Every structure is written in structure tokens, then in C-alpha cells.
Image (cartoon, rainbow, N blue to C red; front, side, top):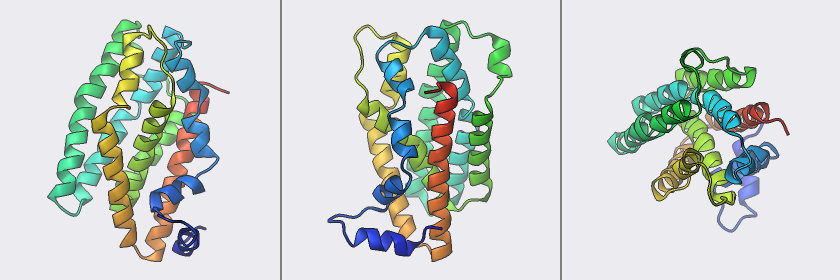
Length: 231
């Protein structure tokens, strides 16, 4: 069990300690394994076949419904309008721009309507869906922020890391662009800051739950991507 005392001990040796940096470090090796997943290199370098990209997107689309519900819970549990505005704006992007990318990908790569409406989700996809729903149903605001920080920061990190090839399929390039743009970078920075601020207000038990939620979300991210494209 990781406690606030563990963070304090780590912070004592840092010039500018941040709780989110510590959370990322304590989530190794799963964090780096996800950010450096070969799936993202294959995507960026044009080595991911169309049917492979479509299959990945079908699985990833399985998170949109529980993820929008999670954001809804965050909006409801936020301490005030300032947070609700930022989260609501992100919800709008997710249900418009990102949803459109999914739908146009399914059309472009010939994903059958039956597959879109009743996907055969991988066990790892279902496990991650369950975690998102459980966090929304039972977690406090800080735990919800922890899950959101992981899901968004991981995607920003891989999108910043990869080297994009020339002539990449437009929809693959669009998927990368969704996770590497100024607005998204600002949102991830906001999530990290708000999680850090909320973490400072927690008692020891709630702080430990936050850490557990962050780590479990990272582990589910790794398991999902390993299932979509085994190493």
C-alpha cells in the first residue's frame, strides 16, 4: 500500500516535486510500456494495415460510452463551475470531433454495421470498461481525475513521442492529431494541476485510493494495448 508518506519521502529529494510526476513514476513499468507501445509506432510509420487500424478503433470506441459517463460523474462531483466548464468543453469535443473520427474510420475501412452495434470486445477491453464505470459510480472527484489524467496523459505522451511518416492515411493522421494539438495539451496540463490540487486536500485513506486508481488505470491501459497488438 502506497501512502502520502511515500510521496513525501520522494518529494524531499526533488527540486520541483509534482504528485502527478510521482504517480507516473510509481506506475512503472506499465506507464512506459504503454507510451512506447509498438502499436503506436506501427500506426505512425504507416505499417498498420487498414483492417488492423479498424479493429483497434472498434475496440477503442468501446471506451467512449463509459468514458463520457465518467466525465459526467466528474462534472457532477466537481467543486464548482470553473471545473465544470472545462470538463464540459472536453465532453463536447469527445462527442463531436472524436466521435466523428471513429464513425468515418468505420465507414472508410468497411466495418460492418453489426460489428459497430455489437462489437466482440476483448476481455481486456471489457475489464477497462468496468474500471471506468466503477470509478465513476463509486470514486470521489480526485479518483475520477486520476483516471482521466491517465487516459489523456498516456495518449498525449505517445502522440508526442512518435515520428509520423509522410503519406500516412488521413484518418490515421487525424487520430494522432486528436492527441497532439494545443487544446489537448492544455487540457492534460489542467487535469494534472487539478489532480494535484485535489490530492493536497485528501486524508491519508483517500490519498491511498487515488494512488491505487491511478496505478490500476495505467495497468488496464497496458493490458488493453497488449491485447490489441501483442508484442
